[in-house]
Each structure stands twice: as C-alpha cells, then as structure tokens.
Image (cartoon, rainbow over all chains, first blue to last red; front, side, top):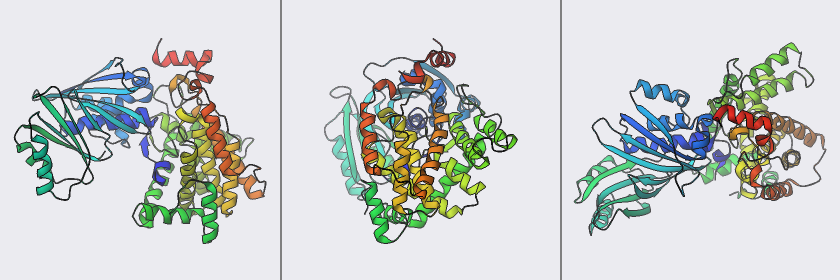
Amino acid sequence: MNIFDIIGPIMIGPSSSHTAGAVRLGRVANKLMDDETPAKVEITLSGSFAETYRGHGTDRALLAGIMGYNSWSEEIRDALDIAKDRGIEYEFIKKDLAGAHPNTAVIHYYLKDGQEGSVQGASVGGGNIRIDLVNGMKVEFNGDYHTILVMHHDRPGVIASVTSLMRYEYADLNISNFHLSREEKGGNAIMTIEIDSLPPDMLIEDIRKLEHVTNALLIRRL
Amino acid sequence: MLKYESIQELVSAAENGGMKISELVLQDQAESMETEPEELYKTMQNSFEVMKKAVETGQKSDQRSMSGLTGGEGYAMKAYSETADGGLCGTFMTRAIARALAVAGCNASMGRIVAAPTAGSCGILPGCLVSLYEDRGFDEHDLVMSMFTAGAFGMVIANNACIAGAQGGCQAECGSASGMAAAALVEIMGGTPAQCADACAIAIVNQLGLVCDPVAGLVEIPCIKRNVSGLMIAFSSADMALAGVAPKIPADECVDAMREVGNALPAALRETAGGGLATTPTGLKLREQVFGK
C-alpha cells in the first residue's frame, strides 16, 4: 500500500467496485480484441452486478472499458451513446452464474470479420479485478502485471518453447506468475503468463510463430 | 522507512525529526516508491486539481445522480449560504457543506472524483481543503502537503482497522475520511504532530459505530449527507485539538475500537442494503422506484 491507494485513485463515480472495476473488466475485453471495435457485445451480469447495474452505471462502465476508455475517463457517463455512434450493438443479460463472485460479468464479443471471444471476470473490491475465464478456459490474472495469453494445442514441449524463447531471445523478461489450463488432453489450451516488465511487441509476434500456438495476446497492465 | 502501523509512530518520527508529518511522509513515500519527492508532490497536486473541479461540477444546478434519487444538493446549499447570509453555521461553514455535498453529488452523477479514502466518502477532504483554499486564502502548497498527512493517517487506519463500508460500516469510510481530514486541518493551522493525532482521534470517536446502510445499495442515500457530517466533525475535531481539548483515548486505541466495532456489525449493516435506512418503508419504495419489484 502507498499513499495514493488512500488519496486516490482518481476515478469516475459512484462506486469503485461497480464502476471503476467494471471499466477494468471491459478493458480486458478491449485488449483481447486488440483494440478493435466489435460489431456486437453480449454482456452477462451476475449477482450484485445484475441487481444494481443501472444505478451504479456498471453497464456504461463495462462498455466504456470495452471501447478502451479508462476508469477516470469522463466519457464513461455517455458510453451507451458513444457505443451506438460507433455502431456497436450491445445487450445486457441478467443471469445468476452459480458459484461466481457476486460482482461477475461475462463479455462475449463478435468482431466484424466473424471472429468471436469471451472473457469472464469479477470486480473484487476497491477497483481491483480478477479474470476467471477467457474463451471458456480458466485463466488467472488481475491486470496488475503485464499479462501474455498464449492459446495453443495441448502438446508436449509447447510451454518449453515459449519460455525458452522468452529466456534466450528476450533475456530481461521475468515471469512472476504462470498458469496453464486446457479443455481436454490434446485439445485447446491456454497459458497465462504474468511478467514484471513490458515486453517488446516482437515477442508476441514471435510466440505466434511457434509450432502448435494458435494465438498470443498481450494485456498491458491495466 | 515508516511502517504505518501506528499513529504514534508517525507522531514520534515527525517530532524526532523536527518536521511536519507531511514532510516526513513525503520523504518516506518517495524513498519506498523509488522516485523523487517532487514527482509525488505533482501527483498529489493533480489530485487537488481534480477535487477543485469536482466541487465546481457538483455545484451546477442540473447535477442529478444516475438513479435520479438525488441531485442538486450542492447547488441548493450554496444558494442558501448566499440568501440566508450564512444561515446558522456561518458563511464559511455553509459554503464548506455545499462543497462536500457537491463532490459527493459529482460522484453519484458519474463525475470524476478522487477516492479519499473511498468514493463514498470522497467529499470530506475536498470539502475541507478547497474551502480553506478558496475562502480563507491558505497557500496551495500547504494544502497539497497536508494531503500526505491525511493519507498517512488513512494508511494506519487501513492497516489496523479498515476503510471499506462492506467490511467496517460507514465509520470505516466517512469516519476514516473525517479523521484523516481532521489531522490535515490541524497541520495546515500550524498544530503539532501530536495535535494532528488528537484531532483524528476525536473525529473517529464521533463516528464510531456508524453503519453502512445505503438505500437501493447505491452510493447516494445517506452517503451524500454523511459526507457533510464527516466534514463538520473534521472541522470541530481539529478546532478542539488546537484548543487543547484533548481526546481521553489515544488515536491508536480509537482505531482499534473502530476495528472491533466494525467486526461486531451484522452483515445487514455493512453495505448490503439489508438493514438500517435501506429497509425502511421509504428506503424500500425508493429501491423499487429505481430497480422495479
């Protein structure tokens, strides 16, 4: 904790968990889309998010984050209109997700080229978030660090090829957290790699070229 | 380096170093964050600017919350201050009340604020500091520095009790903000580090047990007005401390009591909208008005 955790953050009200945290959840989707404007988003709200989203502006906050705005951007208030202007079709669905944190949202996005994806996360208090699922697969990160997501096929040696690349081509990168999950043996898998410093853009390009890797994304510290 | 585990630590270290708590904390934070004090000062100055702007935004006549439950409080109070020639509390105080209402209203209408320490209690510190700046002509440098004192007291409270309504009730949010502001006010007025601690203690004592019972679960009713009581208590506590009316219970023990009281609060009175004002007949009706049955 430092002094600016107490006198701060600078944020758009009214609630750090229901507004500021919601923007950050939206921003993760924005990063997954590589800053692209989606054609459509379906946002599922669970628990307290479902009950009180209108009064806290949680809907506006999520959309603002999806469009790349920050938790201190004054545009959050007008996010519904801005989304319409940008041609984003959006829908909010209230649905209780069993076992999920009370402030959970699932953002399902559809890009103009037909690609789609999803992210599920929770606002856990004080503007902090936790991401639980990306494209239906378990991940483990909170946006406090730079995070690399590597989608790949579950094959022997893929993790080694990614970490070796990081070690031998980008020696300064230090991994602070690593998590792997897969749909089934030999099926789709995802690595969550949190790192201390921002990697050069080339790293992501290089990881994408590795055998059995289907995609790699960098989510900068939020 | 400071541990921020007791208020006594802050007081002793400042006294031993012959400096203000704010100077001590700025130095310490720069060291622990591995940056220059000037950088931290600039960041804090920026927060002060956001506070001034929030006062302005929240005093507009058309200020309305997102839910529609509240709005226009800052504007009404400022207008009253002028027409009633300061009303009962006097011009300085009624204008300060208007500012606290304005910032809390700015928060409720999705405006930009500085959480201090939380969004729900964001009107107290700016209500105090911007009033001294705009109406009493205090030096901006001293005001910005006093925010380091306020923050340091907040860190101790966060470490030893808590600053979240969901955990400790409103005493943890508005109570903490008020204690932090009281300490800052004493420093601005030239009080000693020990008097800063006294003011914080008195402010906490006056809000001990305050529950968090927001109508419809929104940061509006009663939060906006509790920013005013927090501000009034901050001013009166600072004046008492400066007058030598000492608290009989030391600040650190008051913080411990706050933790204990917070732990004893039932869940219904900790931001769940399950009790208190939230479940009064009118509270429930207002909830229905916003969210339906």
